[in-house]
Length: 242
Ligand code: NAI
Image (cartoon, rainbow, N blue to C red; front, top):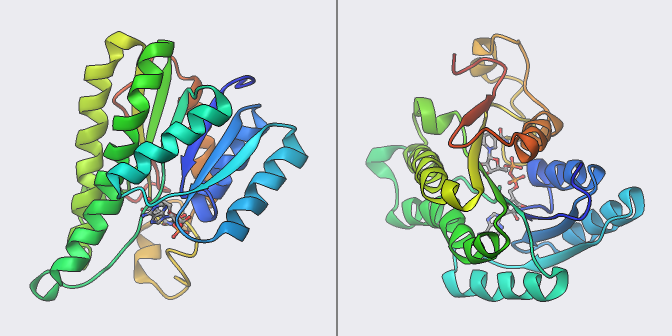
């Protein structure tokens, strides 16, 4: 389905990003994994994509919050793959804390990675998409950006901002044949969420359990081929934000 296409997945070395890399590779896409620090994990994701799905896969260390570093990394990806058609902005962090006591650096770090990071990637990849008259951008937001969450004002603000970015990019880039959508996961079992066995919020999920990384990857795969869907926010949350 995605044979001959190249997908860039930020934060693709673990968790949801790792599952997205495998899913898109399973559909035939070549994969560029952008990771923050763990080269061994990123290389192992690439090896698995190559061995199990016969696609090309390479890892790039890059802090998505750094405008110039993203520019250089996108240039390397272009040199290695020729071009790319799919961008998944998945890299994200949390620095939770109560609003009245939150440190300025914790607010800034979350906004810089989760929101500005996605802007940096879109900003530097848009030229490739426009020249190819083809592009599919998928931003991984969160139900926290739709509902708000006590103790996560920085994270919720970054994820709500990502929804605004998604809708504006969708309108602006549609005439160039580029779609931009968001996926909003609820509680997904990963390193970021840790052990949630005793979390009372689990009782508020209508489907009664946490989601799996593959559930989010399936939604991303759908959006890569949903050729008449743009500016949408697709919840993958077991119904928690209904
Ligand atoms: P994770 O912590 O397991 O993985 C995050 C990935 O982002 C890691 O590979 C990390 O290296 C990368 N990353 C972080 N900062 C970076 C930077 N500055 N530059 C480049 N890469 C960077 O997290 P998880 O759970 O897999 O989450 C992935 C995305 O899904 C995040 O955007 C998160 O906010 C979102 N999400 C996760 C939910 C969950 O329940 N796990 C729920 C809703 C949204």
